[in-house]
Image (cartoon, rainbow, N blue to C red; front, side):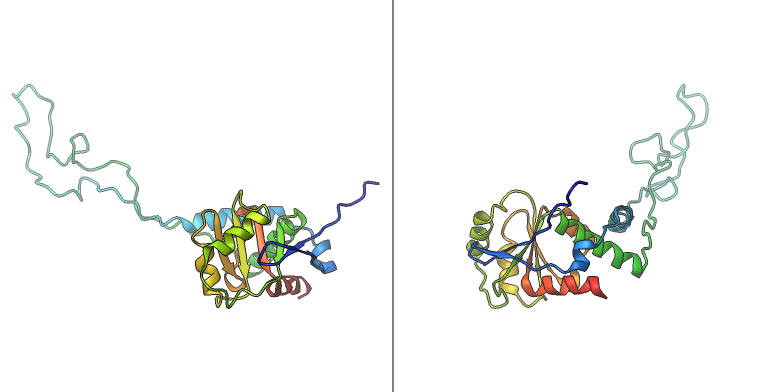
Length: 216
C-alpha cells in the first residue's frame, strides 16, 4: 500500500527566517476537497463578474431622420428607406447585444463547503505557509514585503497574504505596490483568490481561525 504524503505547513518570520512548521488539526488534514464544488463555484463567481451592460442600438434607437433617402424607383440604385437602416454606416445594428443579467446563485452551505475545500486543497498541495510575526503595527514599507518574498522564494507567481482583519493598513499598502501580490483578511476571503494564488501566506492568528472552521 502506497504511503500517504505527509502534509506540512512551513512557518516564517517577517524577515524570511524559517520558524519550523505549523501544527495542523486532524480535521483539516483528513478533509477531502470537493473539486466538483470548486468548479461550480468558479463558474458562478466568473458569471457574477459580468456586468451584462453591453448594448447596441437598433434602427429604432439610432438618432437621425427617417426620411427616405431618394425616391423608390428610377434612380438605378437599390431601394432604400432611411439612413438608419443596418446597411449604412451609423445605422442600427441587427441582433446586437442588449443588457442582460448573468448572475447565478450559490447557496450559503455551498459557499462554506467550497471555501473549506479551497483551503484544504491548497494546504494539501503545499501552497500555504504561516507568517508568525505581528503585522498590525507594521509601517508602510514595500521593501519589507519584497525582502520576505525574496528570502522565502515566493517571488515567482501570485502571492496572497491572508490577514486577521483589516487593521494592518501599513502591511496592505506595502504589499499592493508589488506586482502579483495581493492581500485580504478572513472576513473577505473567497475561493477564487485562494485558487488563483500560487503562494498563500497566512498570519498565524488567521491560520488558527482557518483551522477552527473545520471543527464547526
